[in-house]
Length: 219
Image 1 (cartoon, rainbow, N blue to C red):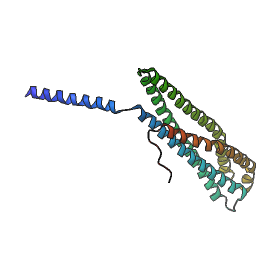
Image 2: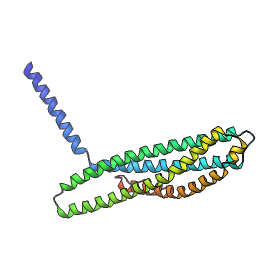
Image 3: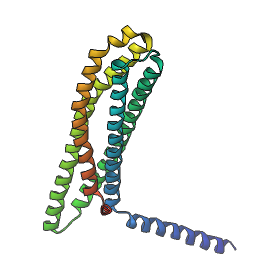
Image 4: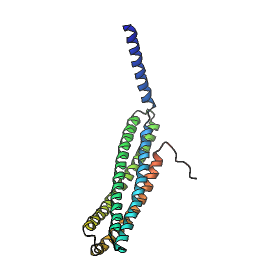
């Protein structure tokens, strides 16, 4: 009986090891590349959503300062809610980009390990060239995101300050005093939108280039 149990235990252990080995063999680094690509596409979608929310926020601000109603509270609430939503979307974008960076690092670390194991010099050189090409493209997108993020912060800060100011002095005089600040926010927002549009396109383009799955043909 003991021998039978030991034999069964050994068989189960061997099966577990075999499954683990097969699972390891089935794992490919392109999965990490595709995860990075998915992160790029997800980030692009969220950046696009934030761009639309910026439009809504500035529109509600303009409506408040240029067309103030007898009761300012509904207009202020719409503006304030839009500012909060914009901040939330910006946080979602940042979280998505952070996850994408993590996947990208794992992808390139594994690529370097596999590159070292390629025996054929010609294939190894081609792989190294492709690694540099993709890595440079990803670094370029990261730099563009950092620049856009830097441009976004003062715009968001001004919107938050207007929100706080009018949260206390929600009067016709208080609203009127924000007209020049609102004009500045609109100018900053227009410049920011150009940067955001290009960044969204770059994220999507690189996401397609790094994915193992081709995008569905346009209908």
